[in-house]
Image (cartoon, rainbow over all chains, first blue to last red):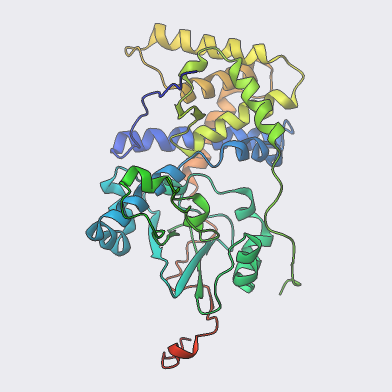
Length: 213
Length: 156
């Protein structure tokens, strides 16, 4: 069985392309709104289908950025200084007025992101937010009891690690630069990118450990 | 303040959903043109995924055969190839066009309605409800410093 690799358009960054993307994105949004209003379907039904593929949109772009940051200390510094500009270097960009900030996990500080008011999310690098990210349970509990919530995701951090929760808004979207896993010295960027998970960039998980060969 | 919510955060996912949708996609014309990465259906932008999900959801909500969507997609691609200067077409743009045509044919909506609503969406700032930027963390759990970390100043 062969896998077909279709040529993908590079993410739009020119003015014309950006406008065209904005228009069709708005059209799809309008389409969904009309269908819901006319009682043809509900958001939940569409969410359920989207959920099947949600892991595929975008996380691979964020993983690329993380892998580059792990491999190139100067790029990493640029990323921490101005994530939007650094991502643009790799051809990754979002709509205007949506800046991103990457917060770096260390041995003593672990970050997690949320949008307490709705579901603001750094979609250019992470794609669509998972449904749980949008639910009131996550949005309120990650702020109130972050350590407990992270444990529910299987992330049991030592009590010596401080947890910082960042609230994204429509103008500023946070995402997490996870720590590079141990034992990855020999890996190239492509191999490193495969270790980066969406959940590790939200802060509810850690990157994968390298496979032992 | 809302009462303490202890709802578990991670919902269950079913594998049968994936199988069901993949089966539908498999029956589509030009299925080789569905953008893929390592065999998995891939998307460049969130709207593409949403459009795909809409098409599948509309099909499952109605009692019409999937062949309708197949036909609309074929037609949309044919029309594009006949009318446009460029030969190449973008899969999800054709998908949206096909879905619109289908919905108009079924009397669910008119293109005029959709055009108007699209303009409204474009004019509305995204998530305009809150644009207040937070430069500091909204919550911090300091944890318990180990005995060796004793001299770190407390953060507010």
